[in-house]
Amino acid sequence: MKILIVNGPNLNWLGKREPDVYGDQTLADLEEYLSRQVVGRDLELCFFQANGEGDIIDFIQKESDAGGLVINPGAFTHYSYAIRDCVSSMEFPSIEVHISNVHARETFRRESVIAPVCKGQISGLGFTGYRLAVEALTEDGIQ
Image: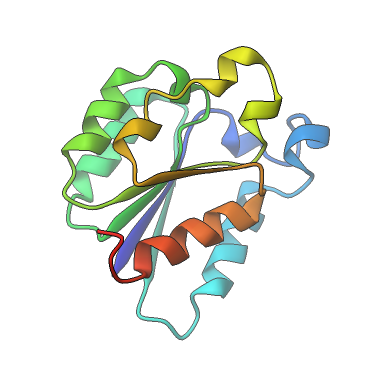
């Protein structure tokens, strides 16, 4: 089963950007962590990060044969109806993930236009949230 792991704007700056909020680990560390979690399982993780909305949409559409999507839309979470429409048009289930607890931060971060078209949202568990999302997508019944 192929699972897409999509990260939006500024997540390429993990480890540099606000380490008190996002920690000191990098995007490469996240990808390595998740890859280790699936060793020996019949899973293919396809990692993608982009700062542009259209790039994210193009990637998801190109990979429409995937079995699931873990997406951290970054700032696009709050206003990208284009990404929302893309996610909702896919035949596979999606889970929105955020490294920080968006509900304990600025008010504007609490509203997601993407979460309503996802099976669920995981927020505030750091890299563990991505692992849990992959696990949820691979369990029977999530689809």
